[in-house]
Length: 229
Image (cartoon, rainbow, N blue to C red; front, side, top):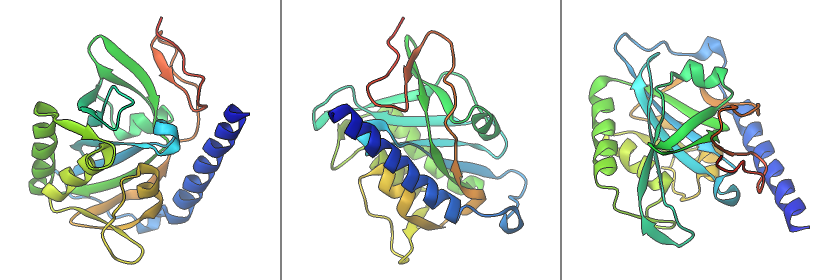
């Protein structure tokens, strides 16, 4: 019964976030073409992570080029634990991510796993802004510190990195986004200051088959993860 209720909650989370994306995604006629030598800043969301509270991943790279991801998390069920930063196993462009329906291979050498990201907030900016965001993210990679579910989690890390470059996500009211819940961030963000919406702005990656590569797979349905082989 608990499992059935959880599946229903997951479906509702996906439905609501997809509805937001469909309503807010920019049509091609409204896209602003980035100048040459511009950079992308993406927030990628796994909405099923953390029992539907979601997980947020920062992804950075030149427009059209390979992305570097910064996935800040903890190996613990405790409120507070040492932080860890996961990486992409192979460089991936945003176009490739879309072709793979949001499936990525994440982790660290010797501990890779398949993970599905459902949606993204997509931005572009100039090099000065990008380098400031990147420097903050790299500093957190080098000094992972303490992850705290309430005071410093995956989303607050992303907020900190964006703010280092002068990028601020805003809600419909025009106020800065204030939440510690990644799924709420995807739903609530309405505009941005300090950067520009990239192409469709809000993206949805449809559910698709996970890679068949022998790695652990974080499935879309809770409780059905594929174990390590």
